[in-house]
Amino acid sequence: MVLSNAYNYINVLGKAADASWTRNDILANNIANADTPGFKRKDVQFETYLSNAVAGTDSLDETVSNIDLNELNCTTYTDQVSLSYRYDGNNVDIHTEGVELAKNQLKYYTLMNSMSQEFSRLKSVIKTS
View 1 (cartoon, rainbow, N blue to C red):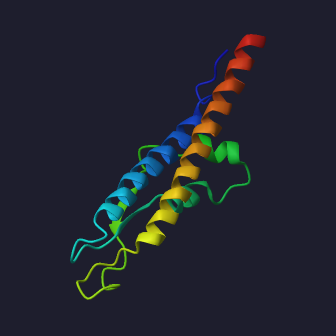
View 2: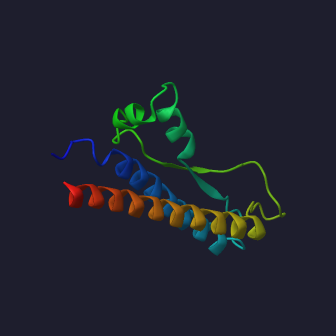
């Protein structure tokens, strides 16, 4: 018997991977606009939303099964609008963006690996049934 909540972790990991993919695009755009006068860096907020969604209960399984995936989305925001590193009003630090991009790529690959492991677990359960 396959339970309807068998994919809960995979669905949440998928939402996190989608947010990470979006962040990758945003960071690449920041890097591309590092020399654009007046450009303000953007970023993605997701981890706070996920933390809030899983906070407050003792059982992670119960919490994950009760997450409303339609409410768990990332948002893009302009970071430190009033801050500028240069006289032209741009606030992109190319070195910081490179580090953030590398960190985000590691996060994305980790999420993909976690989803692959969840599918492997489901596959092994189905094989033994």
